[in-house]
Structure formats: C-alpha cells, structure tokens
Image (spheres, helix red, strand yellow):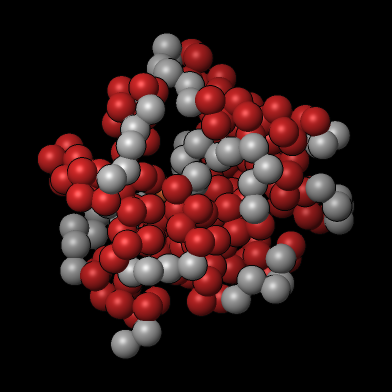
Length: 198
Ligand SMILES: [Fe+2]
Ligand SMILES: [Fe+2]
C-alpha cells in the first residue's frame, strides 16, 4: 500500500463526520494546484488534503498525547485555542507516523492559520480548505465566488488575492466573536500586502 492509500485507509476507519469536507478539499486542491502549480503531483496534493483534518475529531486527551509523544510545543494562543490543536496533531502524524515530505507536513501545519511567505502547497491547501464545495458559510461562499471571478478574468494574482480576502474575513470574524487571533494569521496577511497583493 502506498502512503496515500494508507492515509485514506486510516482516515476512513475513523469517525467519518468530516469526510465530505475532506473529499471536497481533495477535489479543490487538485483543481487549484493544476491551475497555479502544475508541478505539484496529484499524490502530494492528495496526501496533504487527506491529512489536513485527520485529527479534527480527536479529544483533548488524544491531541495532548500526540503533542507529548512527538515533542510538539504550543504557544500561548495555540494552547488556549482548541481549533488550532488539530493542525498541530495532524502535522505530528504526517511527519512522524506517515513520514511525509516536508512540503506536505507544513501544508497540514499551517492550514488553519496560514503564515508569512506561504509555500505553493500551503497556499493550495489553505484556500481549498476555505472554499471547497460543501462549505456553506457566507464568508466561504464569498471567497469561492471571488476566486472564480478572478480566475475567469485571468488575474495573475487570483490565488494570493483570494487568500488575502479569506484572511481579512477570518480576522474580522475572530474580532467580532472576541476570539484570539494567532500571529501567523496577521503575518500571512501582512506578507501578502507587502508583496502588493490586493
Ligand atoms: Fe482544519
Ligand atoms: Fe478542513
């Protein structure tokens, strides 16, 4: 069994509440990488897509057992923000259990917060996660439509502009609901602005 088959086998053996979302991310990731980064292989994009929410349904105990076992440290914001745990625990499994390439591991690690100077596969998974077809949240639909419009206009910055827009909406949503905002999310946004993305 190759690594992709093994990941899918282990994923489908779990609680499958999020499987439609994960399959949606896999489909979007292929579309996005074919459009912007055709050098990324299907297998690489699919490994990242199937891993990204691998631990999403894990309990607090399961997440922290993984952090302890693999020496994963949490900063203050991460420790206090439950939604950020799954990216770090899935990263640990991607790296140490499935021994996936670094580009896949970091795409999993930064899929929720983004970060400054995101790498091609990180951008693909970040946007695919936000706009995949089963997402019905108004902000997701808005970014999906904006990205489609930019691609149609052959805007050379379609991917970065869509990511910048999703970061704006995420930050606004976190502000309005008085939740903590991870510094990686600010740095991701600032980096794109510095590059002249609109
Ligand atoms: Fe996630
Ligand atoms: Fe996700």
